[in-house]
Length: 388
Image (cartoon, rainbow, N blue to C red; front, side, top):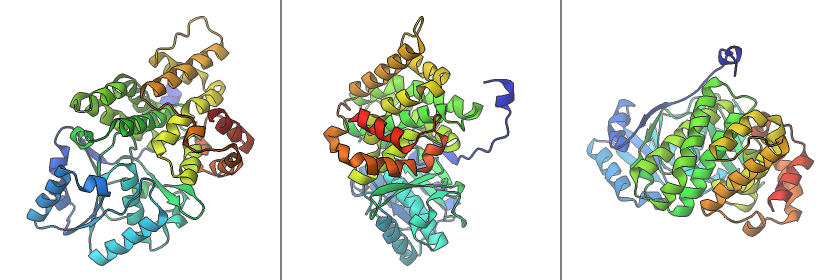
């Protein structure tokens, strides 16, 4: 990018974040700084049972804070779960939200905050900048390395009636503080590690090729891509190694800062439709769609795609544009397969008859706006078909 691009007028949003070993030990201290009297803890039933989470609650209570725990959060948080949580928040008299979990938990916590402050149904806020009243103070502790919900201005909630995941994009849902600690993710199993790590890779790639990218988002996106290439497979193989885990947390953070400001693209638009319809894991959907969307987008972002290809070991010298595209496609596919994500859309229950409906919903998703290549409904149908 040239100097002119480097100084183009842009707005950037990011929360305060503390990154590193024992970041979670600062939770009670920071809750008190936010004036916490009654803390509404949003988590899920698996994370709630972790020893360090129970120790965290004990510490908060010993500091005089009352805690209400809401753990009715699905892997794809439903609108009714957000509404239920918002009612429990009001009844509890809480004044601060603490979200401890993966992207679903963090998104649900954001949704609860939106509803309690704005007094409307969560789905009323779908789209960009539709949250008018600030949410209560929100502190996030991510327990996966991939969603970046702890630093982003995105909140993704499933409409259980329409069976589609809807994006709420607003500065109002950027957390006040993220405590990012590698030890919080050591309990992830290999498949969750793979899905969330590939989710972070999609965030970084889509931000890098987004038509809203900038010098600032580029530097975060490209660093995330490198970190994931060098650490995801090792993190799967050596789950207790805090260096590899820490580097994946750092990659998620970098990717989050990138996509929160550059937005995303067709992978996420299609993934929101697919995951909502079949209730599939978000990272899995992204992983199965990535190489096919990259293939579609290549000609509109070839220079940037080639930089990604080189990071993933593709040999591009002397190749035609079509051959370079094929090399990138193969490199990303092989990396996905190496993580253990070997299925296709057909393997996870997608039928060709579903595709027209999936494509229509994906085409309406706000993430598609920043895709580097314009896509009509038929284009999206073809990409889904290729991923079968």
